[in-house]
Length: 266
Image 1 (cartoon, rainbow, N blue to C red):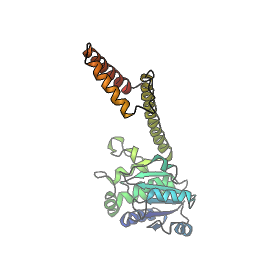
Image 2 (tube, one colour; image 1 turned 90 degrees about the horizontal axis):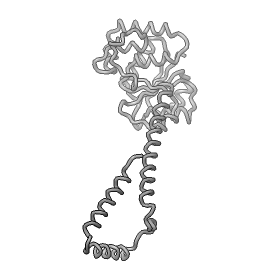
Image 3 (tube, helix red, strand yellow; image 1 turned 30 degrees about the horizontal axis):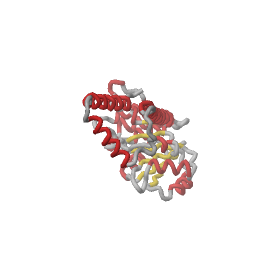
Image 4 (cartoon, rainbow, N blue to C red; image 1 turned 60 degrees about the vertical axis):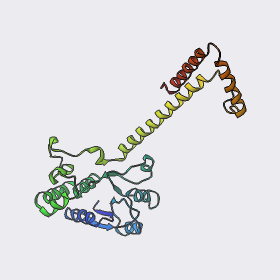
């Protein structure tokens, strides 16, 4: 597995990742738009695609969907999304991906996840990347432009070597690398929340139905305007005589009981 196609319209990012991948031993090509993607894949036959985009010209999720439904790409796919991008869980099932990363992402993180998809030459590539991170100051400076503010290249290298102490880590795993299995858990949580809300809504309806069960009125038809006026006049007339205040208090109590029962959670 030694050919990587970078699909991104961000020239500086794509060039930095391309140079890093070449330095550690990969063959690399760049595709800057969705147009011509299928031909680029056919010509270069990459083992891994790294896709980064959030625009009308190139969208990571849209490319993932094209790879799965149109091109039916059989290789490995790493999708990179904007950190504030909202994801519909239903969209996850429609895209081709092996890793889902959220910005900020630099070359070290890309290479580390490409390595996770490999079965051969992993140690030699790790050693080359470690040497690059230790000795190439231009690489370190450019890499730190892409990673979290305040985080060093050495801290990023934990994705590759695993040698950094835990108390030195500043990254949060939950939104840096989410695989398909984790996305299924997220989807399940959302579906459970929707089901719970539906059950709550149903319990309110049942409480309302129970409260109005003894009312002798066809609620689907209701009263005509003239009938309503007649009822109101009769009620006002009835309340003008003793014990009018008691009847008013009774009606107030009934209204409060009705409102309480309607809003009560079962």
